[in-house]
Amino acid sequence: MLSFFRRKKPQTPAEAAYSTEELAAAFPAPHEHEAPVADATEPAAVESPLPPVAPEAREPEPVPAEIIAAALDVEPVVVPLPAPPPAPAPAPVTAPTLPPEAALATHPVVVAAAPGKSGWRERLRGSNFARSFSGLFSRNPKLDDDLLDEIETALITADVGVGATTQLIESLRKRMKGREFADAQALLTALRADLLAMLRPVAQPLVIDTDAKPFVLLTVGVNGVGKTTTIGKLAKRFKDENRPLMLAAGDTFRAAAVAQLQAWGDRNGVPVVAQGQNADAASVAFDALQAAQARGTQVLIADTAGRLHTQQGLMAELGKIKRVIQKLDANAPHEVLMVIDGTTGQNALSQLRQFHAAVGVTGLVVTKLDGTAKGGVVFALAREFGIPIRYAGIGERPEDLRVFDAEAFVDALLPESLGA
Image (tube, rainbow, N blue to C red; front, side, top):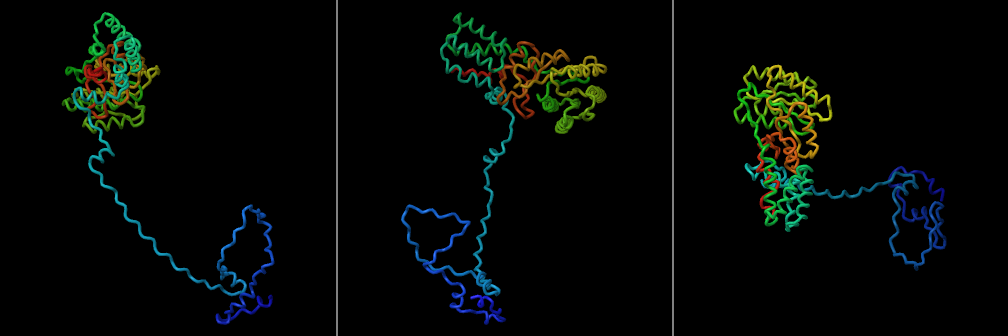
């Protein structure tokens, strides 16, 4: 056996050929009576309670060529396997062509609200105020105290405020006990009339005094209410009215605020006076007023940085801006326009109180009334301060900054056909 493995390596392939008998002698099969030796690393076999299954008859596995070559000390002969068939190329995927309607649904285009009351209804119907009253009269068709309690809860939830709500509910209760209402629909009509009477005195549009050279409009408000965007929309409105105007980039603290206002100016073809970030806001307003007087500009809109009403140092800076521009025009600013976020709620009352004490607010712009804004804060502002509400923001486009219309606003929040 050992002499067989120590045979001399043949010099030619013909001499390396061996018969089947010689290979079988080199690799003898174990006798049937010899049990295979278990590997120490293998776990012991567990006897199965099931009867043994007879193994199927199968052909003996061929000995690999590498084993034979190692035993014979020759180079193995590798038989190449047939190459697998090439995989079919995947079919080209083409993007489906969407119809114009589907393309608009995938990339919606923001359009301006419709003119008139229909535009107000469309944008304010999703407000918390409108949703609170949508099913109120259908749930309480009977004219009783329970209906008044539901109305009171809806008004408080919509940020109308405790004072204004109490005034409205007590008036309705007194009239209901006097049997002035025949049914719930008559009570709804009375509620609409009371809400409209609360807003009608403050629905005063902004009037540009043409004798002022220029008419200075100073915008103020807390952070994030949309002052700079409101200025851009006002610039578009005044430009469409053929009013020569100029913008002053006085928000020198917020990053990119100056660039944002300059972008609005470029879009509307309006000059912008700016000094860069961290400049003195009073100096920017002073330079802009000088430039507007020299050019004969009719309207100057001055932006200011957003500030919390609780920051006394920043609130005092607003007073400084007002005093500096009054060195050039004792009547300036002719309008101090405060921008209020419609989603702020009752906190807007304290904001207006502090800004009014600092610079004397003469007009309001209530923004972000579209969407889920509660909207009832407008009634609270009107009842407590009586300051004119100049504009209302009901959308994103410049056309959606509307002159405040009390009748359209009440009709959108509380439609006349709500109780029908």
